[in-house]
Amino acid sequence: MGFLVSSVEECAARAMELLAHPEKARALGERGREHVRQRFLCTWALRDELMLLRSLLDGHAH
Image (cartoon, rainbow, N blue to C red; front, side, top):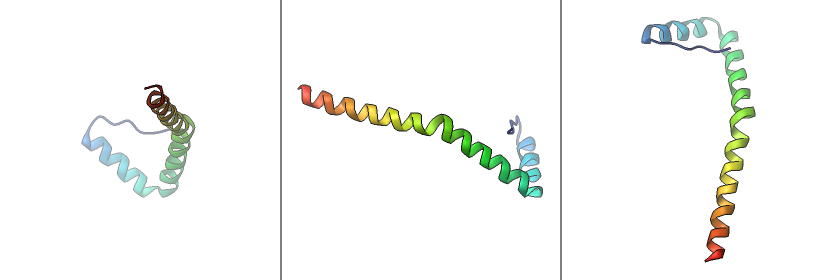
């Protein structure tokens, strides 16, 4: 669950909602953090390592 907003007013309303309900804000943050951890962090780390290996191998080939 998350929020998509299409105006400044909607963004402000959602922010006020989260400020009024800190338990909801905490749960939303935890789910978001886990979503990013599972779907992005390992991928980016692997990509960075592969790019490093490629640059090292390219350097040795010349």
